[in-house]
Image (cartoon, rainbow, N blue to C red; front, side, top):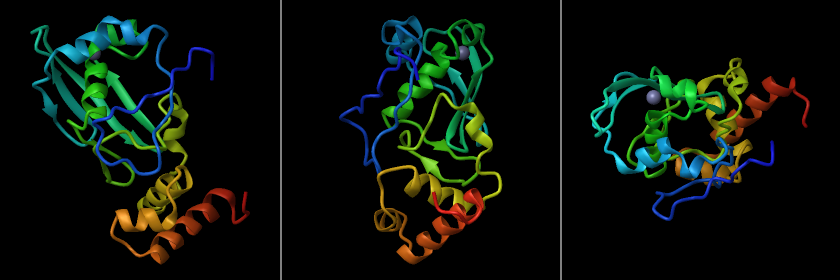
Amino acid sequence: MSSQVQEYVESPDLPEQIGGTPAFSRPEGWTCSTPWKRAQQEIDTGGPINDAERMVRLSDGEGVHRCTWALKGRTLLAECDCRGYQFHGGWCAHVASLWWQWINGEIVVNHLDTGREYPTPPAWLELDAPAQKHVFEDLTPAETDAYLSVELTDAGVREWARHTDRSPGTVGNQLRSAKDTLYGGVER
Ligand SMILES: [Zn+2]
């Protein structure tokens, strides 16, 4: 964490959010950057091409770009094939547009491990932690889902169970099993 960290501010329009909102940093001067302005002004007429990638076609007619845009572990895989992606430290106008669409509930993002679809950024998300994408490799999808959604957020077992229409016992078991695997059976 550096002094440049900006807290993510929840938009008042966000749909129901379980367990709080994620915190992460973006490049310095981000909010007045060209990519972020374009992301808010221009319409994206692209769409998903598979679970992990989308085509982004902004209304300024500058071309179509292929972006990786999916959740894995507790991070977001975000990449674009344009030159601006390298230049703007990973936040080109296309990636920025996807982020803008996501926080406004306009697109749904898949979690590659759990298959869960996220209509807004989840509370457990750590954007600055690409290494976090392999953390849950030894867990089943259900264990990963329970760990992310309950252990890493403010949500309790009961709240999450109700939200996903399962019994608290089931979620509790998945969470325990996840912790056993991750901590070798030793409680933190
Ligand atoms: Zn791009």
